[in-house]
Length: 594
Image (cartoon, rainbow, N blue to C red; front, side, top):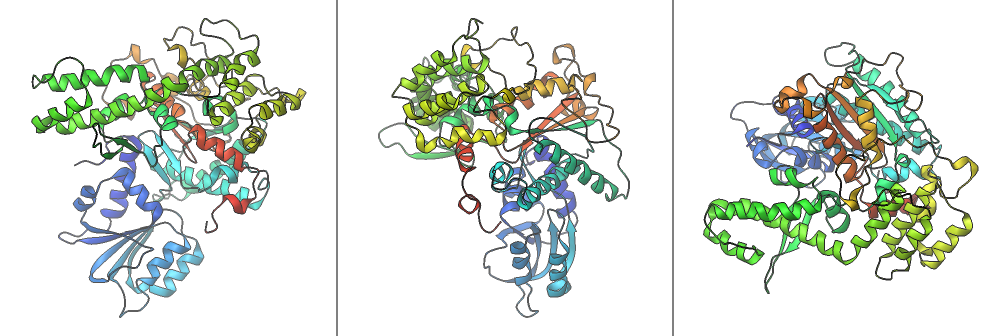
């Protein structure tokens, strides 16, 4: 089986294959692979156990745990250059008589500090056949989405207690180094730009990335200085578009992750019937159907899945009329050939129905208010004259959860560019959210005006006119990042607001893009060979709607592929919890052993 054949995942797997597995391969020789927490997650994102078997790996072990010795076998150590992982390696070869494996092939994800390297050298150098750094310090979360390995990134970037401290500088440096490994994997040396704004975080990170890129490409394996490629890397602060982080999204993936308790991409559901069993399903790109429907509006998904189910069942002249999940269970017993196909469709039908039951009970009423506040106009295009009048019905409704009320209050504050201290205190008191009031107040640390002042007139990105685009009334808002992507590709970003870091920015050929409607379709590979890349990085998390924008823009502009990434992926609830934590002391938020 070919491992995940899409975009970033495929590139990461190819790099691992050539840098690790091909590097130490011997015919007819099986090996053990030892991983730490980071590399376990990395491998699980871009390959399956069958792919490792094909590379001669027979056992996968955790380097931190105590293991049975297998002295006749060689071991590959694919680990991060941290003290904990290096100690795990050294313990396995501490003495010649007690060593666990025949020999070690060591591959670090990133640059190994001298003190750790010297520790290995003095402890177990004789057992090591290879020791290499392969420069992959990011997770290929999806084919066009990456995240970084930076625990507590949001707190470390935005907490006022860490501002202008060594901790803040250190986390920025780590983020910059990890972004460079992404550029290296893509074989890009992009022009680095950033959004200038009230905060200097984006410019600070952009300068660090530029400096690290320079150092990396001075010393690449071919010892060549790599010229700038026809690509751009744009760095943005999370406060740039707060609206998209709290709005209820109604496209399938974003809606499911917002409304349902999906953790580690695992959706739990119960089968129909009195003896309904609890089942689990992983939402992943290996599944063509998930890729096809994840960015569709829930209304389209609800219509499409039963159609697909009917198609499969009609192939066997099965049931007619409206299909229920219990009728499908019967159908599956009769049709082993279609069992897998139907079971995936049943999962997404369950997922869509779970989303819709939440939507109908409460969310539907919220969505109209949220859209009117976010856009400043109603569904008919009439200007909203009094935002407070739009907000009040939500606050007075006892059936809405406090998180939803907080999201609505935030949209009101964002729409009016801040409110008065007196008004804010009243809102918090009347809705009885005093214990969670920091979810609102702490946005000031992201340079988003919460209390209006003469200085709080945020310079907002000019919005593109989308009035001719067909949308659902409750999904009129478009993430601002989508405008930025399209403006960047069309060369319309103002260089005053979006300065370059390098002295001589590369020639940007994204602007040679034409709309998909005017271009015959080529295969993915052909399409991307001549294309430019636009890499977007957001400090402090991206939303599922922003991820969707990267795919939509890549689809519309065939000559440019958009890759989007961040420190982590946000859901509205997770973000509000993180914003609340900003005013807490460091030891209450960050893990000790980082």
